[in-house]
Image (cartoon, rainbow, N blue to C red; front, side, top):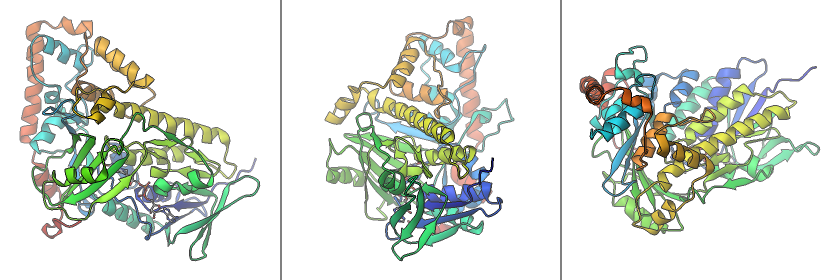
Length: 511
Ligand code: FAD
């Protein structure tokens, strides 16, 4: 059996997805004899230009590509992110944090939330947030790296991610990829050649007449999905019934207000507003449903709720929540927006690019393009989208808000089967199970279910093995240890200065 390895890879698109794929491919496969990666992008088309908040998995990607964290912080004007603060989502005036990492500590072999539920039933009013070092540090504007081996410290249970300037991140990755031999070609793809027999893509033709031949094509063309959607005709599964937001206005503004290492999401009458504090500016956006609000009104709401002076014109975006039924067809693999988009509420898109790259690496084809590997890639990708969709839907459907048409629509949404099962289990006994190795952990589900007002009717019977006094003492002790640890952490700004991750003062307030 002689199956020839794929050595000629062509990536269409130079947004975050394209440059992440290029960097990872040369890092992992670059030493294969004859291996080449060509990336084509068009400055006249540009990139989506948003995508600033991430989740902790990105640390694994950064390590894989050999990125120096402090250089990265400086060059992308990045800040740390310890979670997302959800304001007004349950009802106006209410807020909670979905933190990274875990809550409290498990006791007697039982998950922590059961002891917290028992404490609450005994009248202990402390919120679940006060048992998360990420939530407490985030609200205090503090930051420190996790200490995974320091088992006695709550820092062993901390996780973090980044908030960065999307344009600078793509440029930073481009620099790394080009230094490792990726060839960048400027031009607009105007024609896609296909093999008459197999339908495989054979070459891309640019507006200047150049032809780029390849064996494997990675479609990172953004919402256009030029190869997977337009050329191969892979249909789009529309999930806007569950995720009704389909528009966004984004605008950066001058730094003002607090600079906690948290992304903030504030519910608005027909959607929500993001606030992402970076080192040089704040990224803002209003995600809304056009069925319930005009773009003009969405823009006015955004402009009325900025911390500082706008630094650019509003960037208008449209999207549909959902994904391509197959992310890999024939010799085309789609990553990023070309494969799907589930709205930015939990900052999952860049992660989906990353997990798509990881999956592609583990199933990297030869020129035979075996269907069994393609099918596995597609099954896993679809499951990941389904699990994330259900988690996002939780935020919208579990709300007490009934102050606008949009929220009345959301609160009457029928949960999907996966979400229904999670809700029933949690309501019944406070238990949470992570299915299919899904992205969001038990701690994430716990924080958002509680934050959105879901109340368990019972807790694990073994939690009652601790008597009332011991329950209160242990809970109080955990809160105290977390508060004391946070008190000793530096502010995020001081941490960045001390470690060499702060930008030069002259870079403030530039886009
Ligand atoms: P794009 O950035 O659109 O890049 C497409 C590339 O394809 C461009 O280089 C373009 O020039 C090229 N191209 C297209 N057609 C052609 C052609 N014919 N010829 C040549 N080149 C072509 N993600 C997060 O993780 N966190 C967030 O906080 C977040 N916020 C978001 C907010 C909004 C409102 C939106 C819409 C998205 C957000 N995302 C977020 C998603 C994130 O922006 C994207 O996942 C990420 O930027 C990757 O985009 P992309 O590279 O797939 O597409």
